[in-house]
Length: 166
Figure 1 (tube, rainbow, N blue to C red):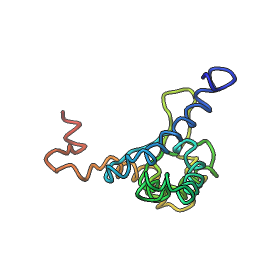
Figure 2 (cartoon, rainbow, N blue to C red; figure 1 turned 120 degrees about the vertical axis):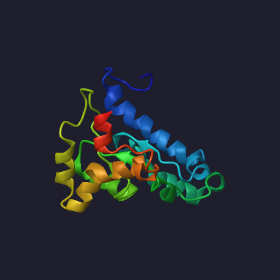
Figure 3 (cartoon, rainbow, N blue to C red; figure 1 turned 90 degrees about the vertical axis):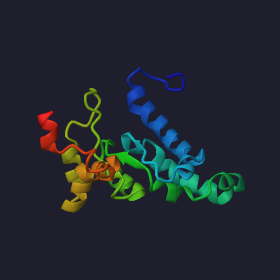
Figure 4 (tube, one colour; figure 1 turned 60 degrees about the horizontal axis):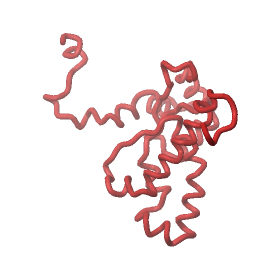
């Protein structure tokens, strides 16, 4: 809040997405995504400001050798391995993050139980996309992919029935 002028709730409104954007950029520029190529990491608030920073980061990568030397692969390619949630409060922004990160890397987000949240995230997704298969991916399939439940051995998985019996 020392850099943000205004009332305290601005931390949630402006501060969090700004910090998340910087964190996502740092995951690339700090080598995290290159060092751990199979890492699945998700950023809330649609990746914050990162989708807007990514073109600048890509241009910097192409312009400055020092940036290129620290990043073995282009930022745009690395960004496509990040997951983000759909919590952006705007259908156009939601379309943009799907275009930036990919249809397989955006999953539903709500910020529940906080008071500053998306009250009907499914409707936001439905308003942004007409394709039923894409809606299904965003609403639940991408989250299942992110959690990689299919990679857990069958003896470690709990079926819905098994979980209910425990």
